[in-house]
Amino acid sequence: MLHAAPSESYANLVRITVFGIWILKFVFDPIQDLSVLPLSVFSPPFPLNALPPQWHNVLLSWPALITIKCVGALSCLACFNRKLIPAAGPIASLCVILYQCLVRGFGHVNHAEVIALIAVLVYTCYSFSKSKQSHPEPFAITLLLCLSYTLIGAHRFITGGSEIFLSDTVLFWAENNSKLTSYFDFNLGTSVAHSPFLALGLKAGFLWITIWEFIAPLTLIFSKLRIPFLVSILGFHLSVLLTMNILFWENTVLLAVLFVPAFRKTEKS
Image (cartoon, rainbow, N blue to C red; front, side, top):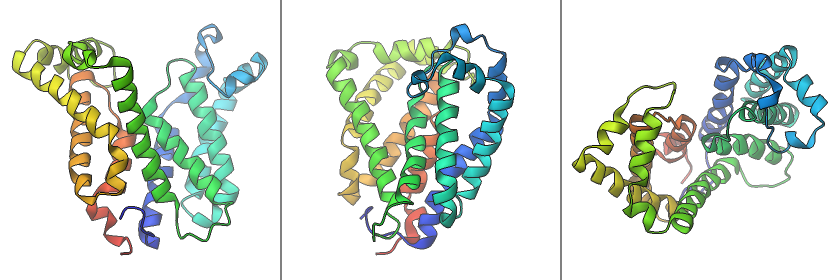
Protein backbone atom coordinates (compact mmCIF):
# COMPACT_ATOMS: atom_id res chain seq x y z
CA MET A 1 0.00 0.00 0.00
CA LEU A 2 1.07 3.60 -0.53
CA HIS A 3 1.14 4.21 3.22
CA ALA A 4 3.63 1.39 3.90
CA ALA A 5 6.87 2.55 5.53
CA PRO A 6 9.13 3.74 2.70
CA SER A 7 12.77 2.81 2.41
CA GLU A 8 15.53 5.33 3.06
CA SER A 9 16.31 5.74 -0.65
CA TYR A 10 12.68 6.36 -1.62
CA ALA A 11 12.20 8.84 1.24
CA ASN A 12 15.31 10.66 0.04
CA LEU A 13 13.94 10.79 -3.51
CA VAL A 14 10.67 12.37 -2.39
CA ARG A 15 12.43 14.90 -0.15
CA ILE A 16 14.88 15.94 -2.89
CA THR A 17 11.99 16.24 -5.35
CA VAL A 18 9.97 18.52 -3.07
CA PHE A 19 12.81 20.88 -2.24
CA GLY A 20 14.24 20.59 -5.76
CA ILE A 21 11.01 22.03 -7.18
CA TRP A 22 11.51 25.16 -5.12
CA ILE A 23 15.21 25.42 -5.91
CA LEU A 24 14.30 25.53 -9.61
CA LYS A 25 11.74 28.24 -8.91
CA PHE A 26 14.11 30.36 -6.85
CA VAL A 27 16.92 30.01 -9.38
CA PHE A 28 15.01 30.57 -12.62
CA ASP A 29 12.15 32.89 -11.58
CA PRO A 30 13.42 36.51 -11.77
CA ILE A 31 11.43 37.65 -8.74
CA GLN A 32 13.79 40.61 -8.30
CA ASP A 33 12.00 42.21 -11.26
CA LEU A 34 8.95 42.68 -9.03
CA SER A 35 10.76 45.68 -7.56
CA VAL A 36 10.01 47.74 -10.70
CA LEU A 37 6.25 47.10 -10.60
CA PRO A 38 3.97 49.78 -9.09
CA LEU A 39 2.75 49.05 -5.57
CA SER A 40 -0.68 50.35 -6.56
CA VAL A 41 -1.41 47.04 -8.31
CA PHE A 42 -0.06 44.87 -5.48
CA SER A 43 -2.78 42.97 -3.59
CA PRO A 44 -1.04 40.80 -0.98
CA PRO A 45 -2.69 37.50 -0.03
CA PHE A 46 -2.70 36.07 3.50
CA PRO A 47 -0.55 36.22 5.61
CA LEU A 48 1.24 39.13 3.93
CA ASN A 49 -1.93 41.23 4.01
CA ALA A 50 -1.71 41.26 7.81
CA LEU A 51 1.51 43.30 7.66
CA PRO A 52 1.56 47.13 7.49
CA PRO A 53 1.96 48.56 3.96
CA GLN A 54 5.43 49.81 4.90
CA TRP A 55 6.58 46.19 5.11
CA HIS A 56 5.36 45.59 1.57
CA ASN A 57 7.65 48.39 0.39
CA VAL A 58 10.60 46.75 2.12
CA LEU A 59 9.87 43.22 0.91
CA LEU A 60 9.39 44.37 -2.67
CA SER A 61 12.70 46.18 -2.78
CA TRP A 62 15.42 44.72 -5.02
CA PRO A 63 17.78 43.79 -2.12
CA ALA A 64 14.99 42.03 -0.21
CA LEU A 65 13.85 40.06 -3.26
CA ILE A 66 17.39 38.96 -4.09
CA THR A 67 17.85 37.92 -0.45
CA ILE A 68 14.65 35.84 -0.51
CA LYS A 69 15.74 34.28 -3.80
CA CYS A 70 19.25 33.33 -2.64
CA VAL A 71 18.41 32.32 0.94
CA GLY A 72 15.41 30.34 -0.30
CA ALA A 73 17.47 28.37 -2.80
CA LEU A 74 20.28 27.69 -0.32
CA SER A 75 17.96 26.67 2.53
CA CYS A 76 16.06 24.29 0.22
CA LEU A 77 19.38 22.83 -0.90
CA ALA A 78 20.34 22.29 2.74
CA CYS A 79 17.07 20.39 3.25
CA PHE A 80 18.31 17.70 0.86
CA ASN A 81 20.03 16.48 4.02
CA ARG A 82 17.28 15.33 6.38
CA LYS A 83 19.39 16.11 9.45
CA LEU A 84 19.54 19.78 8.47
CA ILE A 85 15.77 20.26 8.10
CA PRO A 86 15.18 21.35 11.74
CA ALA A 87 17.55 24.27 11.09
CA ALA A 88 17.01 24.97 7.39
CA GLY A 89 13.34 23.92 7.11
CA PRO A 90 11.84 26.96 8.89
CA ILE A 91 13.99 29.30 6.78
CA ALA A 92 13.00 27.50 3.58
CA SER A 93 9.33 27.59 4.61
CA LEU A 94 9.47 31.33 5.30
CA CYS A 95 11.18 32.05 1.98
CA VAL A 96 8.72 29.90 0.03
CA ILE A 97 5.74 31.63 1.69
CA LEU A 98 7.19 35.09 1.07
CA TYR A 99 8.00 34.17 -2.52
CA GLN A 100 4.46 32.98 -3.19
CA CYS A 101 2.80 35.92 -1.45
CA LEU A 102 4.91 38.49 -3.29
CA VAL A 103 4.55 36.91 -6.73
CA ARG A 104 0.85 36.12 -6.37
CA GLY A 105 0.16 39.59 -5.00
CA PHE A 106 0.59 40.80 -8.57
CA GLY A 107 -1.62 38.10 -10.07
CA HIS A 108 -3.63 35.21 -8.71
CA VAL A 109 -2.96 32.17 -6.54
CA ASN A 110 -1.63 29.28 -8.60
CA HIS A 111 -3.19 26.16 -7.10
CA ALA A 112 -0.57 24.00 -8.84
CA GLU A 113 1.99 25.37 -6.39
CA VAL A 114 -0.10 24.94 -3.25
CA ILE A 115 0.74 21.27 -2.59
CA ALA A 116 4.43 21.85 -3.32
CA LEU A 117 4.34 24.66 -0.75
CA ILE A 118 2.48 22.56 1.82
CA ALA A 119 4.97 19.73 1.25
CA VAL A 120 7.78 22.00 2.46
CA LEU A 121 5.74 22.78 5.57
CA VAL A 122 5.12 19.05 6.09
CA TYR A 123 8.85 18.33 6.14
CA THR A 124 9.49 21.26 8.46
CA CYS A 125 6.77 20.25 10.92
CA TYR A 126 7.72 16.56 10.94
CA SER A 127 11.34 17.48 11.62
CA PHE A 128 10.22 18.62 15.09
CA SER A 129 7.87 15.69 15.62
CA LYS A 130 8.64 12.93 18.10
CA SER A 131 6.72 10.38 16.02
CA LYS A 132 8.39 6.97 15.84
CA GLN A 133 7.01 6.33 12.35
CA SER A 134 9.78 5.94 9.78
CA HIS A 135 9.66 8.64 7.09
CA PRO A 136 5.96 9.65 7.36
CA GLU A 137 6.33 12.59 4.96
CA PRO A 138 5.85 10.78 1.59
CA PHE A 139 2.48 9.38 2.61
CA ALA A 140 1.36 12.69 4.13
CA ILE A 141 2.23 14.51 0.91
CA THR A 142 0.52 11.84 -1.22
CA LEU A 143 -2.63 12.13 0.89
CA LEU A 144 -2.62 15.93 0.64
CA LEU A 145 -2.10 15.75 -3.12
CA CYS A 146 -5.05 13.38 -3.49
CA LEU A 147 -7.23 15.53 -1.23
CA SER A 148 -6.41 18.60 -3.31
CA TYR A 149 -7.74 16.85 -6.40
CA THR A 150 -10.81 15.73 -4.46
CA LEU A 151 -11.57 19.29 -3.36
CA ILE A 152 -11.23 20.54 -6.93
CA GLY A 153 -13.56 17.81 -8.22
CA ALA A 154 -16.08 18.34 -5.42
CA HIS A 155 -16.09 22.10 -5.96
CA ARG A 156 -16.72 21.57 -9.66
CA PHE A 157 -19.62 19.18 -9.00
CA ILE A 158 -21.18 21.40 -6.33
CA THR A 159 -20.86 24.79 -8.01
CA GLY A 160 -21.25 23.72 -11.62
CA GLY A 161 -23.63 20.80 -11.33
CA SER A 162 -24.44 18.96 -14.53
CA GLU A 163 -24.55 22.22 -16.48
CA ILE A 164 -20.77 22.69 -16.40
CA PHE A 165 -20.34 19.35 -18.21
CA LEU A 166 -23.28 19.60 -20.61
CA SER A 167 -22.57 23.18 -21.67
CA ASP A 168 -19.59 24.48 -23.61
CA THR A 169 -17.80 25.70 -20.47
CA VAL A 170 -14.59 23.74 -21.00
CA LEU A 171 -14.58 24.73 -24.69
CA PHE A 172 -14.80 28.39 -23.68
CA TRP A 173 -11.89 27.91 -21.27
CA ALA A 174 -9.84 26.25 -24.00
CA GLU A 175 -10.50 28.91 -26.62
CA ASN A 176 -10.14 31.83 -24.21
CA ASN A 177 -6.90 30.62 -22.61
CA SER A 178 -5.32 29.75 -25.94
CA LYS A 179 -5.61 33.43 -26.89
CA LEU A 180 -3.99 34.76 -23.71
CA THR A 181 -0.32 35.62 -23.42
CA SER A 182 1.54 32.67 -21.92
CA TYR A 183 4.91 30.94 -21.71
CA PHE A 184 3.49 28.50 -24.26
CA ASP A 185 1.83 29.10 -27.58
CA PHE A 186 0.23 25.89 -28.81
CA ASN A 187 -3.00 27.65 -29.89
CA LEU A 188 -4.85 24.33 -30.08
CA GLY A 189 -7.75 25.47 -27.90
CA THR A 190 -9.50 27.29 -30.73
CA SER A 191 -9.05 24.37 -33.13
CA VAL A 192 -10.44 21.90 -30.60
CA ALA A 193 -13.38 24.14 -29.69
CA HIS A 194 -14.44 24.43 -33.34
CA SER A 195 -14.07 20.74 -34.18
CA PRO A 196 -17.27 18.82 -33.29
CA PHE A 197 -15.39 15.54 -32.75
CA LEU A 198 -12.54 17.02 -30.70
CA ALA A 199 -14.92 19.26 -28.76
CA LEU A 200 -17.02 16.26 -27.77
CA GLY A 201 -13.87 14.43 -26.68
CA LEU A 202 -12.73 17.37 -24.55
CA LYS A 203 -16.15 17.66 -22.88
CA ALA A 204 -16.29 13.92 -22.18
CA GLY A 205 -12.74 14.02 -20.86
CA PHE A 206 -13.67 16.91 -18.59
CA LEU A 207 -16.33 14.79 -16.87
CA TRP A 208 -14.03 11.76 -16.80
CA ILE A 209 -11.19 13.62 -15.10
CA THR A 210 -13.51 15.30 -12.61
CA ILE A 211 -14.70 11.87 -11.46
CA TRP A 212 -11.10 10.71 -11.04
CA GLU A 213 -10.23 13.88 -9.15
CA PHE A 214 -13.14 13.33 -6.79
CA ILE A 215 -12.19 9.73 -5.95
CA ALA A 216 -8.42 10.36 -5.82
CA PRO A 217 -7.99 9.27 -2.14
CA LEU A 218 -9.30 5.81 -3.03
CA THR A 219 -6.02 5.20 -4.85
CA LEU A 220 -4.37 5.03 -1.43
CA ILE A 221 -6.51 2.00 -0.60
CA PHE A 222 -7.14 0.21 -3.89
CA SER A 223 -3.92 -0.42 -5.81
CA LYS A 224 -5.73 -1.25 -9.07
CA LEU A 225 -6.96 2.35 -9.28
CA ARG A 226 -3.52 3.93 -9.18
CA ILE A 227 -2.38 3.45 -12.77
CA PRO A 228 -5.75 4.48 -14.31
CA PHE A 229 -5.76 7.50 -11.99
CA LEU A 230 -2.20 8.43 -12.90
CA VAL A 231 -2.78 8.03 -16.65
CA SER A 232 -6.02 10.04 -16.46
CA ILE A 233 -4.53 12.88 -14.43
CA LEU A 234 -1.34 13.12 -16.49
CA GLY A 235 -3.41 12.99 -19.67
CA PHE A 236 -5.56 15.80 -18.29
CA HIS A 237 -2.51 17.93 -17.49
CA LEU A 238 -1.18 17.33 -21.02
CA SER A 239 -4.50 18.29 -22.62
CA VAL A 240 -4.66 21.46 -20.50
CA LEU A 241 -1.15 22.36 -21.65
CA LEU A 242 -1.99 21.83 -25.32
CA THR A 243 -5.43 23.48 -25.33
CA MET A 244 -5.08 26.15 -22.61
CA ASN A 245 -1.31 26.78 -22.48
CA ILE A 246 -1.25 25.99 -18.75
CA LEU A 247 1.44 23.66 -17.40
CA PHE A 248 0.96 21.96 -14.03
CA TRP A 249 4.56 20.79 -13.91
CA GLU A 250 4.81 20.75 -10.11
CA ASN A 251 1.88 18.36 -9.74
CA THR A 252 3.15 16.28 -12.67
CA VAL A 253 6.54 15.80 -11.02
CA LEU A 254 4.99 14.95 -7.65
CA LEU A 255 2.55 12.51 -9.25
CA ALA A 256 5.39 10.75 -11.05
CA VAL A 257 7.51 10.34 -7.94
CA LEU A 258 4.62 9.39 -5.66
CA PHE A 259 2.68 7.08 -8.00
CA VAL A 260 4.87 5.67 -10.78
CA PRO A 261 5.77 2.08 -9.75
CA ALA A 262 9.34 2.36 -11.08
CA PHE A 263 10.08 5.09 -8.55
CA ARG A 264 8.46 3.11 -5.75
CA LYS A 265 10.47 -0.11 -6.16
CA THR A 266 12.64 0.95 -3.27
CA GLU A 267 9.65 0.93 -0.94
CA LYS A 268 9.55 -1.69 1.79
CA SER A 269 6.88 -4.34 1.48
